[in-house]
Length: 298
Image (cartoon, rainbow, N blue to C red; front, side):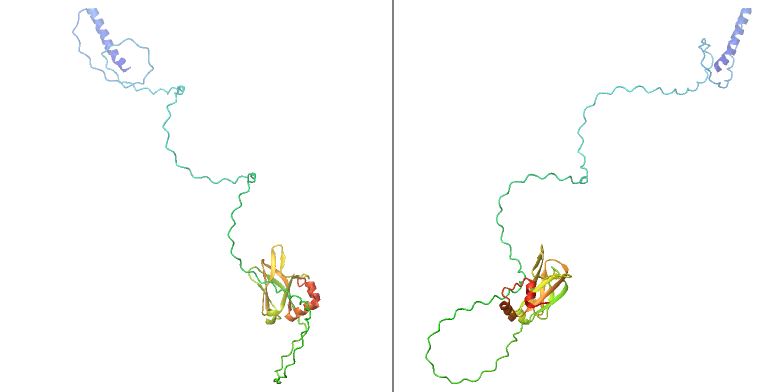
């Protein structure tokens, strides 16, 4: 636009010059070239018009117009077809072993397998060491007196010997023992038995003479009941035994622990044992009722 404004004055001068030449037909002197006009302000860029005829080339070129805005990005084209697979890459190094997972729950028990064939009999093992000596059992009853043997034949009468001198009088002998039966019994109630230690029953009637030649019988009952049973007393796997007898006591041992037992201790001197064998032959000392009846125990 600025160029057109500059060209218009120049063209106007040229036309005037041509007309003057036509009227006079005498060429005048060439005029001086006019000075260039001042450049006008930059106008707004107008719409692009149709291309006009080529103007004179003597005008001063105007400034370069501003660069137009970048056009919008076109739509993305359709994805092309997948290319052929590339060659297989080299095998990578083996990774580190992962941590062991938690143990899973135990599965249900499988069915029992068929019974295997009986194996060959193993060699006989070495004889085990002899176990400790068990407690002494109660003293057995004295056996019945044997039958009196037949009287032997009378021997021939010997010759009468010479009369000897009279000897001195001997010392007086000790007083004879009391022939009465002195059997004693005791009830010791509400006792406990233990597998850890013996239960000691204190019985004053057990003298050294009883220990040496008498008989000590022990019977038991559950506290609160009335029936007595002889020792050893065994029920399934539980057992109570009479252990050793000493001066003034008798020990009871067991293989289990339990309270609540009454014990009846019967003390029979040695001479009385012999008498019982005569007066009650075959007396069963394991049966408390038989013993109580024979000895008049309460």
